Image 1 (cartoon, rainbow, N blue to C red):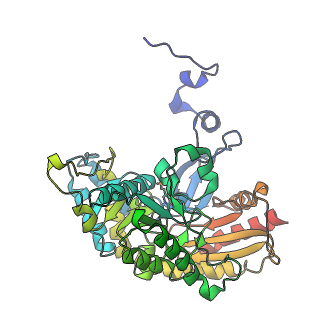
Image 2: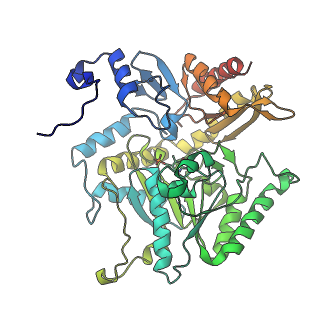
Image 3: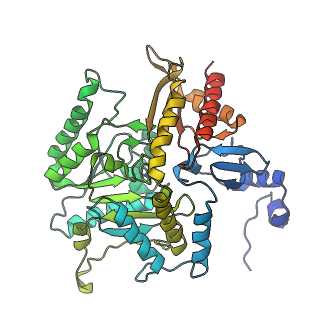
Length: 464
Ligand SMILES: *Cc1c(COP(=O)(O)O)cnc(C)c1O
């Protein structure tokens, strides 16, 4: 018998968990459930019991419009009948099969379906469980690729200023958000960070029509300076979401593709947030006809139902790992649940629904409706800028517009706006003093209006 040190508060170890009432669940949530990116000393439980379409329902019975798509991953709405059915059908066969040397029909079908909709340069799929894993896979793959391609000195990465690629150590290393890097500085490997290509906040002296050329030129200089030692450039195309929905000037991503191709440097695109239709095309890099060497997908891949992610690669990358067992060239990486059949089933159904329901056409229409609703806010004295890309929009809250003065981040204006929006029936999660609107792609025009109305109330209340 083991004897463990019990804390003074052992109440939770004796009660019947099935019979816990709502207040009890809230207390346990505060005391025992450690939430991501959350100050637990200040945490106020928000417990979602069920959901339908674009709506969440709390244990208190409040209905909330899911304005953040359950953190950017729910694309087709909650409880979509075909997605629910895809999982139960798969459950009737097998829930899990390892992908270490073993396969499953649903997982194979998903791989081929993904390649049918992916840029033509991509021919192979490595499955993992979440976005950060898909990025780690890409980074490790690229380093092992060059080792086995007679250029082991190519092992450094270039990443964008402000980049976010996930929270594991490799992902944080290529990340460019100081607040997320600083505590872990001693663990991070050395990455070259270029400027943050921001179409709206340009360096002094750069005119809007020169923005793309300016940033591409900065990256040209970096690439030339480090040419022989760079394994790959990693980029979140069109809009760097976690950075604060920072939009790149048109032409930047294709410019970067050209620069890397000319120097035989691999290009990794991180489509985890902007992919799966959110930008109005299946993949954001397709707006500029970019054909990457590797592409990371996650979040909406499973419709927002299950942990599921993938790293897609070109045949060239795959080929560098071929050889006999003795040569030891296989990719030395794996995740227990990579390619999980339940996740594969719901992902496959998600991709099929995109075709059957013409989801991408809908996104373009809804994006116009959202832009139209947001126009009313664009003259507000505390709105510095509104950006929109497909069904990703962001509102910058500012102390004043001209001259532009930021709110102090300590003021937490974004949080205040979202708190008021919640009283008006909409759930949102701020990024500092930026209010992102990232609704499910199934949202209706009427729900878009409700979303923007709630945000308007929030801005009124939180900025005066
Ligand atoms: C969310 C995100 C990730 C990390 O995905 P997780 O599933 O949270 O690990 C990586 N890159 C981008 C661009 C993201 O938005």
